[in-house]
Amino acid sequence: DVKVTQSSRYLVKRTGEKVFLECVQDMDHENMFWYRQDPGLGLRLIYFSYDVKMKEKGDIPEGYSVSREKKERFSLILESASTNQTSMYLCASHLGGHTSGLHQPQHFGDGTRLSIL
Amino acid sequence: GDSVTQMEGPVTLSEEAFLTINCTYTATGYPSLFWYVQYPGEGLQLLLKATKADDKGSNKGFEATYRKETTSFHLEKGSVQVSDSAVYFCALPNAGNNRKLIWGLGTSLAVNP
Image (cartoon, rainbow over all chains, first blue to last red; front, top):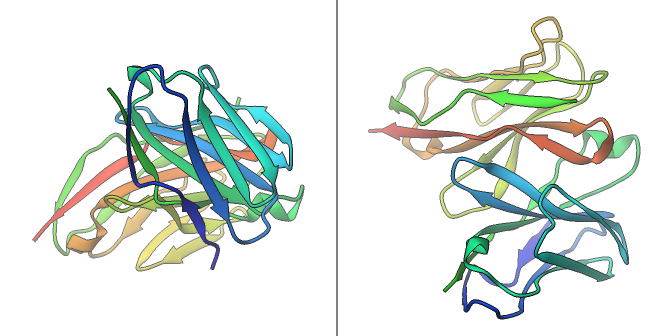
């Protein structure tokens, strides 16, 4: 089974801090994703990566950056945390591939509930 | 563009009731369709999928049939349990960039004993 591990389940930080959320997958997946989940808004894609050092903006990238130095690890960075970034953050990985990857699911970690005070 | 529309929740049922959660989509071509489930305090996990028209996906007593003619992928279960209380998401690959998924907003289900 694919295992996606997020470094923290709960995190409390202060406004203006630089915050790092870490995600590791153990199945050699090409694609990795960061989402945030807010009540009534569903899942919104922040960034995703389709290879080491490759990234693409999602729907709401403002205020965030990402890093993928190794295939198994994908980090989300809040450059200067603000209260409106209080949310549940979900990491996911996906096998990739143009054809076969279409039918493969994304695999999720358990999420990090981040509070910015 | 491609999109997914789910019925709004919350849905509240008694144990052993019949469940339907509606999902309709607009899509370019015939993508795979997915249902994910998120149990309280957890991330999402794949519940079932269908890869082509008329396919039926099934898992844990849940079923959904890929209906091309009605562009629907409704989730059904004949007899829900308290342990089915969760949020359910319908999704399909983004035709413009199939690495990404297009998500419904999720439907919260609460099952009472």
